Structure formats: C-alpha cells, structure tokens
Length: 599
View 1: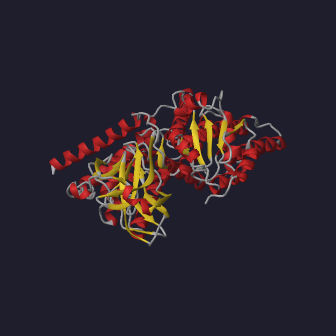
View 2: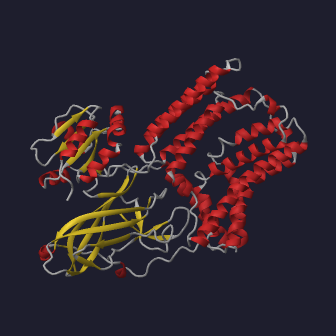
View 3: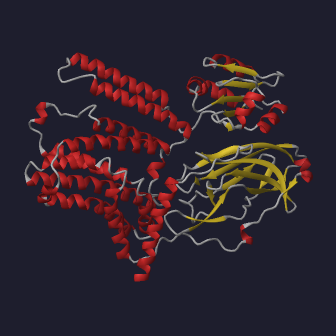
C-alpha cells in the first residue's frame, strides 16, 4: 500500500511539473504549411491536409497527405481519444468510384499530460490511404469528396472537434501512372497501447487526494483575484453577530459546493446519456466562455481600482435581510471555484481520471470532495469567529491590497485571452480596453450629487458604446466566413496556371487599417458567399514579420510599398487587379460578380 501511495504521489508531482513547464515553455515557429486545407491551428501549432490519387501495394486509391507540427496531434484509437468518436476518421465517396475503409499508418505513442496513460496519436507529417474497389465502365474524370473528422490536441489543450471536406478530380484511366506510396501499417508494430484505466491506487487514498486537491485550490493564482473580495468582507462581518458571520461564511462554502455539484450532474448526464465522460477544463476550451470570463475580470479590476462601486438603494440597504447577503456570498463562492479550474488543471486531472473510471456514486463523491476541500478553510474560519481576531485590521494596507489585486485581475484576463486563436484574441484585447473605458465612464463621470437625468445620459452612452464595440469586435461565429489558406507561392502559381481565380489579402497584425478591412470587407456575407460560389482560392498573406514569405513577395514580386493591399488574379486578365486602402468592398464585389460560377 505504501509503495502504491508513493508511486501515486510521484504521479501527482509530475502532473504539476508538466502543467508548469507547459505554461512557461514556448514552441518554435513552424515552417510554412504545405498546400492544402487547414484542419486545425493554434498559435504556432497547425495541421493541414491535401489529397491526390496514388497507388499502394498495387491498389489504386486516394492518398490523404497530412502536414503539420509535431505537438498538434490526432487520436488513433477510440479507446484513448478524449471521447468515443473523436478518433481521426477519413471517408471518401464518389458517384463514379467505390471506396473501401481507409488504411491508416503506424501511430506514435505519447504520454498524456497529467497522467502516465499511453495514447496512440498521429502527428506531424503522415499519410492515410483510401483504396478504390470498383469503378463504373469508361469512367474518365471523377469527382471525389473526402470527409475528415476528429479532434486535435496539443500538450496543453484540446481544440474543438472538426469536420472538413476536401474535393478533387481524378482521371481513372490514368491510374497506372499514379504515384506509388508506402507506409508502415499499425499491424506491423504490435498491439495497440492499452486503454486508459485511470490510476489504480486505493479508494481511501484517492478520496484523500481529492480532498487535498480542493484545499490546494485556495492558493491557485486564478483564485487569488476573487478571494480578497471575500476576505475583506469577512473583516466587515467581524463587527456583526456571530450567527451572521457563520451564515455568510457557510453561504460562500455552499457556492463552492454548488459549482462542483453542477460538474457531477454534467458528468452523470454524459456518462448515462452519451456514453462519454466530462473532461476537466472543457469550459475553458469554449471561446465564448473565455471571452466572457476575461471581460468579467476587466470589470472586476475596475471595481478593485475604485472606478465604480456597487451600492444598493438606501431603501433596501436600510432593511437588507440575510437573504441578499447570503445569495451574494454564495455567488462569490461559485465564482471562486469556477476561476480555479484552469490553474489547477494538472492536479485535478489525476483526481478526475480516477473518478471517471469508478461507479457513478463513488465518482460523484470524489468530485464533491474536491469542492469540500476548497470550502473547508472558509467553513473553519467562519465557524470559529474568534480566529478573525488574529487577522490584521482593515486600513490603508487593505485598500492598497485591493487595488493591487486589480492588476492581478488584469493579468488573469490577459491569460484567458491568450488561450484564444490569435486572430480573435487581438479583437478581444481591443474590446477589453473599450470596455474598461466604458466602465470608467459609468462610475467615474458621475458623482453622488450628479443630477439623475445627467447620470442616465452618461451611463446610457457608456452602455451603448460597450454594446456597439462588442457587436463590432466580437461578431458571432467561431470561424472566418472565408476559408483562408496560408500563403504559398507555389500553390498560387499553380492555381493561376489552371485559370482558377486567386485572392490574396496582404495584412499584418500591427496594421490597424488591415483590421478595419477585415471587418468592413472580408467579414461581409455577400463577399464571402461570392468567394465560395466562384471557387476563388483565398490566401492570407501575413506580412507581420519581415522574414515571412508573404513579406518578401509583397516587396520583390508585387512591388507594393505596404499593407493593406488585396491582389485578385482573374482568369481573363494577364495582370492581377490590386485593391488598396480601406474602401474596397464595392470594387471587390463587382470584380467577383464578373467571375464565372464554380463548376
């Protein structure tokens, strides 16, 4: 038993080390992606795929060639994927050809961060082969559609599940001249790694670890921005009755337990209704959740700086009963538990990995024990109010501490935004600054003596400005309306030679006018629809860094002095059309309408 406990303790220490190293480490910049459709991208990590006819072991078929960085990986087995059905799947179909099941290559074995589980994955450059089993008589050029589904993860996070469709034409009559390919199949490498069964330590020890994990949550950086709010409240409650102090403290604990109770309910629904398990941290993979929490941190920071205060009406404050205070305290406990999850990913992963391999009653107890561990210090402190006398009295130091915590809140906000895709994170940061300005207007431009009408006007302007900025900078939708491809000069030349229209948007992250062009032109549904309907190859020419291929070609090939500039190659013109400046929407739309529809 002691040996198992020691081994488990080492696993937990490894979880924390993996998380800390992953958070501080930086990935090297990837090389330019090969021509193909991007399957997934996160910061420097990416993976793309393209298809071409090929032969393997004398069999004609379709080769799906994946290209990407090694940290971004797909799952090879449904047993070790994050959830059933999330393993990589490749399916081909055609009206003129019949296909059999895809043949996958040898997988790689990695160790899941936060545990010692071995997982089979595909990463980097690899090929999947889909054999053709039959063709209709006298088949010439045949349209082929390949659907690719799955989920991609890095060593730090998992991206949303995807479904992408690739299309091409192949000439069945030329199959004898198709390229020969070969790769090592999984059957050549022995049996697959065993499915994850979770840590095997004793039940009592696992439950103890779950409780201790909850206690440790109280010192996590993501909790610190919220805890001072409650601690300062406890200072105030020390002046009131013992019963009031205990009631407010236990309400805070109840809020924490309610969050973990919600997690247990979700875990039960997924396991009973969908045959899967809840992944700790899934809510932090939702872009809308990240944006909402980051903006909440900005607003709370403004509160900590004293920009605005929340004061109930005097008619209510004079007779505020325990209900209002208890509800607010419970809400603060719920928020504290919610904000603890990203920082505690590694230590909580081991507890959840064990809980989700057990029977539902035991798993529910384990998850709730994490919440009980987090709430325990507050329950002790509020149940024994005499301990409050050992806390220093509020004064100038507490006000400075409150303001300093505002800067911690801003750090947490930036950290949350950093988890978003780069293109979206920039817009969220801009919105965060505008939101802070609007909050400053709301609380700083009025005083207690400001006339009511003037207060309404100022605060209405602030609210409208924040709403307009949100609609402008945070449009609904998780992906670009246009399927932008990374800049690849060879692919552009090939498309032009085949008389396919090509649109290149040269831009840079530091170019504010470029951002405006993306919002006013390329975010338009009519333009995005024309680009798709006309079969235009849309290419994003990133010139943020001087060494980027797009930067070099913009200067040496296209002879353009700067960005933004869009270049449109039309099949009936020898020279491309160049569109400069901000007001290019009408001209671009007119040019696109002249193009023939996609065949």
